[in-house]
Length: 68
Image: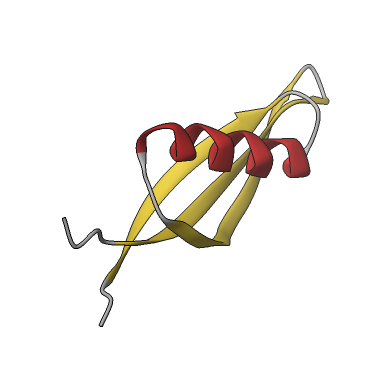
Protein backbone atom coordinates (compact mmCIF):
# COMPACT_ATOMS: atom_id res chain seq x y z
CA UNK A 1 0.00 0.00 0.00
CA UNK A 2 1.25 3.49 -0.77
CA UNK A 3 0.34 6.92 0.55
CA UNK A 4 0.81 10.09 -1.47
CA UNK A 5 1.02 13.73 -0.46
CA UNK A 6 0.37 16.95 -2.39
CA UNK A 7 2.25 20.19 -1.94
CA UNK A 8 1.85 23.54 -3.67
CA UNK A 9 4.83 25.32 -5.20
CA UNK A 10 5.20 28.50 -7.25
CA UNK A 11 7.81 28.77 -9.99
CA UNK A 12 8.72 31.54 -12.41
CA UNK A 13 10.55 32.05 -15.68
CA UNK A 14 11.52 34.96 -17.89
CA UNK A 15 10.91 32.90 -21.06
CA UNK A 16 7.55 31.13 -20.72
CA UNK A 17 5.08 28.95 -18.86
CA UNK A 18 6.69 25.69 -20.05
CA UNK A 19 10.04 26.78 -18.66
CA UNK A 20 8.44 27.80 -15.35
CA UNK A 21 6.85 24.33 -15.06
CA UNK A 22 10.09 22.53 -15.92
CA UNK A 23 12.11 24.69 -13.53
CA UNK A 24 9.63 24.10 -10.70
CA UNK A 25 9.60 20.32 -11.13
CA UNK A 26 13.39 20.10 -11.46
CA UNK A 27 13.90 22.20 -8.32
CA UNK A 28 11.32 20.25 -6.31
CA UNK A 29 13.01 17.00 -7.39
CA UNK A 30 16.24 18.11 -5.70
CA UNK A 31 14.67 17.84 -2.24
CA UNK A 32 11.56 15.68 -2.71
CA UNK A 33 11.78 11.99 -3.61
CA UNK A 34 9.19 9.91 -5.45
CA UNK A 35 7.45 12.73 -7.36
CA UNK A 36 4.73 11.08 -9.43
CA UNK A 37 2.86 13.97 -10.99
CA UNK A 38 2.01 17.65 -11.05
CA UNK A 39 -1.05 19.71 -11.82
CA UNK A 40 -0.84 23.28 -13.09
CA UNK A 41 -3.28 25.04 -10.78
CA UNK A 42 -2.73 28.59 -12.01
CA UNK A 43 -0.78 30.64 -14.53
CA UNK A 44 0.01 34.34 -14.20
CA UNK A 45 2.20 36.93 -15.86
CA UNK A 46 4.02 39.87 -14.34
CA UNK A 47 3.90 42.97 -16.55
CA UNK A 48 6.34 45.88 -16.58
CA UNK A 49 6.20 48.80 -18.97
CA UNK A 50 3.41 47.13 -20.94
CA UNK A 51 5.39 43.94 -21.60
CA UNK A 52 5.47 40.52 -19.96
CA UNK A 53 8.49 40.42 -17.66
CA UNK A 54 7.87 37.08 -15.90
CA UNK A 55 5.72 33.97 -16.26
CA UNK A 56 4.53 32.31 -13.05
CA UNK A 57 2.88 28.96 -12.41
CA UNK A 58 1.37 27.46 -9.30
CA UNK A 59 1.87 23.70 -9.27
CA UNK A 60 0.34 21.00 -7.11
CA UNK A 61 3.08 18.35 -6.88
CA UNK A 62 2.20 14.78 -5.87
CA UNK A 63 4.77 12.45 -4.34
CA UNK A 64 4.60 9.03 -2.71
CA UNK A 65 5.71 8.83 0.92
CA UNK A 66 8.61 6.50 1.62
CA UNK A 67 8.12 3.41 3.81
CA UNK A 68 11.56 3.87 5.39
